[in-house]
Amino acid sequence: MQALGNKKVLLGITGGIAAYKSAELVRLLTKAGAEVRVVMTASAQKFVQPLTYQALSGHRVYLDLFDAEAESAMDHIELARWCDLLLVAPASADFLGKMNAGYADNLLLTLCLASKQSVAVAPAMNQQMFANPATQENIKQLAAKNVLLWGPAEGEQACGDVGPGRMLEAQQLCDKALQHLSPGRLAGVKLLLTAGPTREAIDPVRYISNRSSGKMGYAIATAAFEQGASVTLVSGPVALTAPGGVNLIAVESAQQMHDAVLQRAADSDVFVACAAVSDYRVDQAAAQKIKKSSDKLSLRLVLNTDILAAVSALEQRPFCVGFAAETQDVEGYALDKLKQKNLDMIAANQVGAGNSGFETDFNQLEVFWRDGRHAIAHASKTEVAKQLIDLIAERYTCARS
Ligand code: CTP
Image (cartoon, rainbow, N blue to C red):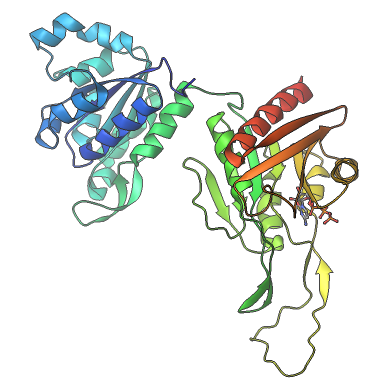
């Protein structure tokens, strides 16, 4: 089933240059399975033609409170009741002000006033207009009236200014709609995750690292987010883009990863240690580039703190899931780590042979917990991650009940 299957979204578009982004939003929401109907204000029509949204949504666009044809299809009260979510994107300063004051002199304002369903607004305006106390006051008061505020983002604006006021990207708004409308199995769960390799400095230009691509961890972050978790991803250096909606903390060394994780662990519900953390670091990284001076060079390595073991030893500890990458006796070593590190679950995989594990797009896992096990068959990392998140949700729910 699609993520937004059977969900109905009424998308209100007000006057602003960001209206063009809403065309993409209609496409993304529709692709996710939602039925989308579009309402435009008069000024929105100055930026984009209704026909664009009609073609993308597959339905006529609602324009006027007194549009006889539209009224006969579905009157405005019916339309307000029809939707699961009324999302105004872009929401101009003028619209937010009128909405806050309870005006109903156009179709979209009337719908906002008549809707008993969730109403979300995605502000889009010049940064000075956004910063104006009148706008700030309107936004504060709308939030107090349970209107959901999605954005704005900071950045370069159409007028050349830089600052907060840009509408969120279509993908971000679609993710928010998804999270709001289909809470998923991990709704309300704070999930902390490590991914990728770490880099241990030898000198300012050299480091020790490993072959982890981060793909498995990033796939788990996406799967957890899709199941409604609030995800914080502490990632070593990888060539991947963080999944939309996930809070990314970029780190380099095992020590930095440790600090970033320990700062957040006690406040998390689930911790998944997917990173290939370097077990050792160089004792004293050189402050200057090491010059070649002799035939042999020795590096003295010292053990890094085990992040996963440190989290699982916390007094207020999250549900802990570890990984075990092994080249032999996968089950024996995995069960050993489950016990030694006092984990709730461990996902083990064979590395170094075949088309799974490091640097590939595929994986297969053998997952163990104290009194059970489950095999996740060879598949894409995206698929394996989905199944692992389902299993984590199941075990986590069991552990809490
Ligand atoms: N891990 C960690 N911090 C470390 C080392 C490992 O959090 N300093 C986590 C990994 O993210 C993984 C699990 O511990 O979830 C197992 O890591 P692995 O390297 O396979 O095992 P080790 O415990 O380091 O033991 P060994 O290298 O001897 O197999």
